[in-house]
Length: 66
Image (tube, rainbow, N blue to C red; front, top):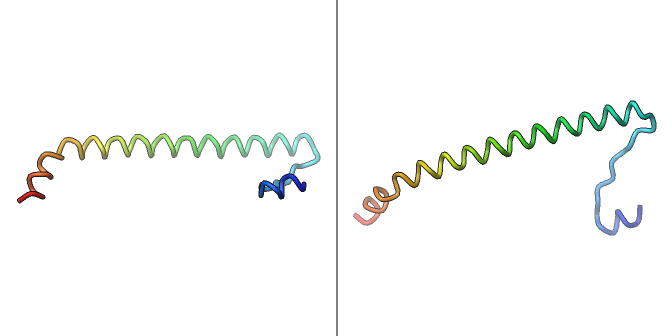
C-alpha cells in the first residue's frame, strides 16, 4: 500500500468472491471496449475534418491575404 501511495496510484476494491471478480472484470472490459470505440470514432472524425480543411486550404490562404 505504501508503494501505491508513493506512486500516487489509485487503489480499487477487489471483490473476494470469484463470481464478483469475474463480473467486475467483464464490466471493466466493456468500458474499455466503449472507450476504444469512442477513440476510433474521434480519430475518424478528426481525419475527415483535416481532409476537408486540406481541400480548401488554398482558398483560405487567398482569402486571408486579400
